[in-house]
Image (cartoon, rainbow, N blue to C red; front, side, top):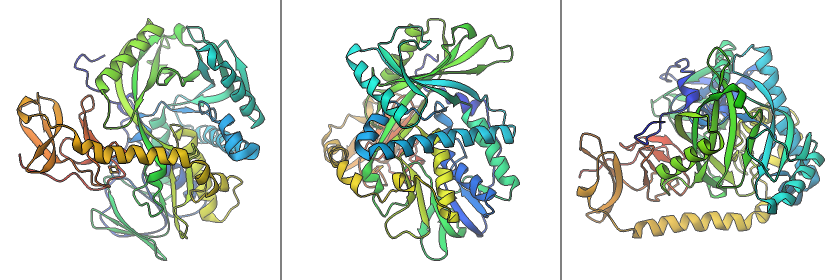
Length: 507
Ligand code: FES
């Protein structure tokens, strides 16, 4: 583990650097434009290309390098504790459709890995949700029952293979894990081989939902398309104000190697201790070691002490897997919908040719594939049994989700107002590598001092809806607590929903 407490970067990205795709410079005319080159965007584009549609993927950075490149990459239908809740909020049929849609996505991915011969460390494993607190065992038993009734091969167990005792766990057999970037880069190559256009470094600025739709880009080129899919994690176009039904959640990851004989053999998650998620992956050529990946310590972007979070997570990994040699730390970001069900389908009530895929709640591997299949069915006019479950226009659940919705909005309001009242530290006291929001001439500035001692100042006002950003010291980024936009120390957008950089300021 690095001693300077900075992130080392994602193991998945470092071990699969990938191909480069050109920025879009000329106008393009296609059947479908897909905005966002993560798992949801690439799966949707590839399915549409296979269905005979001409497709263009427009990615602001590099494909499979955003949230998808930082995930833990478990592909499972067991989503911590979701089925008992779904049974109560969406009925037995809703829970069954959720399970079936996720299970089909997993099997479709398995088929693609086999059909295309993708070398992505695909491994079948049981998935477990465990608790160590005996007081939560009944909750786990109820989840196992609900998951089984929803059609999954689920059972309540106490033996998990973990090197420490648990009070109980839900086990779902036959799930999988893989190297997410190796898989998606191969999928992108298949898409390109079938005539799909892929453009990196292409930031989309505008969407005109006419017939045809027009997508304008920062490079000056325009894409004309019959249909448009917005698959940008948090939607960058959002007439239905979906952002108000989504909460951003940032999660830390530590990884390192351990002897292959210490592999617990499954994929694990617990809601205890601010979430702990564990998996392993093949490592090296001789098979003597495995990569251990531990995730947890979630927090709202722009809040909390990220360095302390990394230390707690690393300490947990060392305590529970004493043989581990930690080498990597990075972070990922998820969006949680107020009713926990992803939003996949028409972008808003009046949308005829614009679609969205968002809110995977940390389960984007199966969710992204599910979205690809669902949106392809909708765009090609096929029936899909779970369209209604994931429809972003759903109204009744919106009533059910009212308490959660109000909580989310209260949190945003608290940041919008409260963060402006925070005391301003003196710039002189800022050490190298640190950043702070300071007040100058009645404005809030986000000021970062680099390792050479030079100050970099940008407006602290997030370009999405105006909340104040705060500094993440471990990742050296400005983060917005309201909807999770992230910016580098010079204000450039790392992650939306913001599409414009923080304004430059003098200091
Ligand atoms: Fe919405 Fe910053 S991300 S205000």
